[in-house]
Length: 626
Image (cartoon, rainbow, N blue to C red; front, side, top):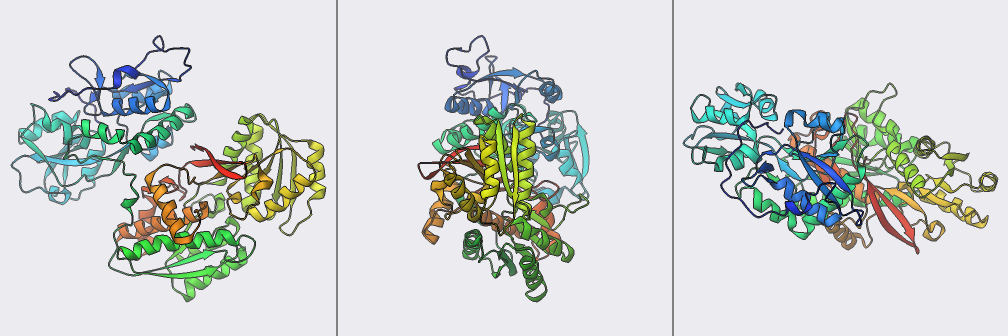
């Protein structure tokens, strides 16, 4: 949490900056370029992230990073220096568009604001007098007095240390002064300022030192009002990936952050890899449809999990797997869950794939205290009970259908569609739910649903409902079913000469989708193999070597789900689902499908990828943030 500094620290080293060129005002903007202009609030009293130098310029890490991203993505920005204690109120009242001011991404803030992807890892560090040899970590603060700025993460961290006495200050520099005077034993502060930069100032240099590693993990992000300036979020996130991959991010980091810093850049290297192996074996069940109508979904899910487990075994994990065909069927899945729990004795389940199968599995897992994480089941009822309470032992690695339905509806409206037809399987929770969410969103956005037609799982002749669709002459047709059923419907749509544009969901993502039938269509998905992050590109390449194919979203989400489970077990340190679930609920995980944290219902907050079909090929269109 960013402190509010009462005394501006002296800067020993001033470096050349790129910021001035992009810090344009509305009157400076070249209107002929039609470049977007964003007003960005910063509290310029927080070196090295943002501060006023001796030339009265606002400089620092945040300024340089925003400048680099703006240059890469073709937008301009104007900085508005704003006091920290009023910075959020100003955003809410519309005084500026964005806050980028070393703001920690926290769940309470995410309820009110939309954040960019995190751009730096920070945390709380322990600072002591330079000659202190007794305090080496948080455990040594027991029985001692530690200072922190009032209401900050540092203060909360001290309160969590058993036996430590907290003394609070109006600003962090006052706490450091009291430490230098010997009135307290330590100070717990944000690493970028007090732990890395402040120690270089004339006031504190040589008198204080940092001990141990950061005792909390915090990530900074830029933020906007909920639902506003989404274009800034997309530009920033894509630009951040580009400046990381180009090496510019590393140059900015080296310019502003001490080489011995406890703050660290966001790691995107796939080598971050497997969580440390525990000293006990684990048994995990994989429930997936390995036969039936969506067999390719099951194959991809199994392969993604096994690839993650092979990596883990190479890193010292001892893992026994129980693989069961649950056929994407509610009763088969329930039977499989009972078998792996009561006969095989597993504590953890990865699966099922289909929501209609994952829902009964979740009810059994929750009742038996077995931790379940579904890679791909998107229906809200997977993690939520009928009374609205959450299933504490149930998680998922994918976004939810309400978000997916809204994304596709917004895409349809963006493509100019005024009218839509929706065809859905009335007996499939996933398909029926997506149809409902798309309809509600499309109509809320001003569109009209002119045909809303149901069919059953066993139907193969759609001539009757397609006759109604043809008569309604919609601009788009939404097909939220799985690939096999969509192949049948799309073929009959083409036979009847219906020219409406086809839209779909993640159920289209299969190598067995007859792609020529969907030419010009769009569908939402959980990741894109075109994502330039090294983590993604390394995974795609390694999967292709192992299985001879490009990984689809099913394989990717299964791979991420497996690593989420392993990291949670590693952090828990015990083979106990009741403990592991608590660590999973608080996890921060960078996956191939995106950065993942969980809400209170075990659902991740993450982006969706839009894929379009052009010349018989899948082509990445763009990402959409929640």
